[in-house]
Length: 181
Image (cartoon, rainbow, N blue to C red; front, side):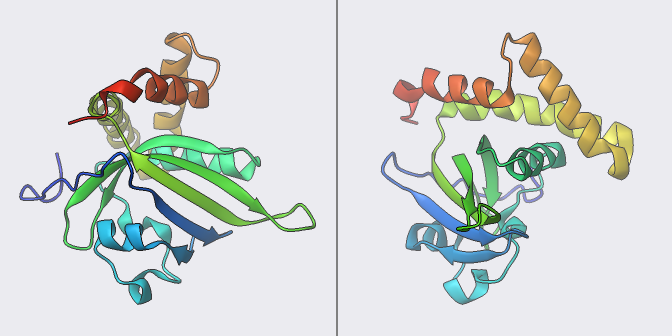
């Protein structure tokens, strides 16, 4: 259940691209106009802020634990993410986050490109996220994110995928034709 029951969903069009860039710690160094419009934040309120300024409380912490683990290994991360706006509305995106390498091949930050998520992706991931939040509550603040991440990776394997990335990309590609809401 959402923190604000009066929240309205902000729907993205198939052509909307939300783009941000962060430093190594996840603080926003660039936000495109679409991100500012959808998130309802002006640029001066975003720059320098931790990207989790838009983190929705419905998102399990285990997803972000997996994201940071994946990114720290130099790999890109894909996910279906629910975000908050400044006015406590929400929007769903299919996110692709990639490391930004300096000339010395050290990660200096991250690029994130987000697109419209299909209703089918949202329904599937909402059910998974509900289970992950339950696991996090059962295991407490310290062990909850790792327990939920482990459950997610096991679930993905049970579905016949060798990686979370393979699962999420398969889900996204399977629903390319069902993006209309």
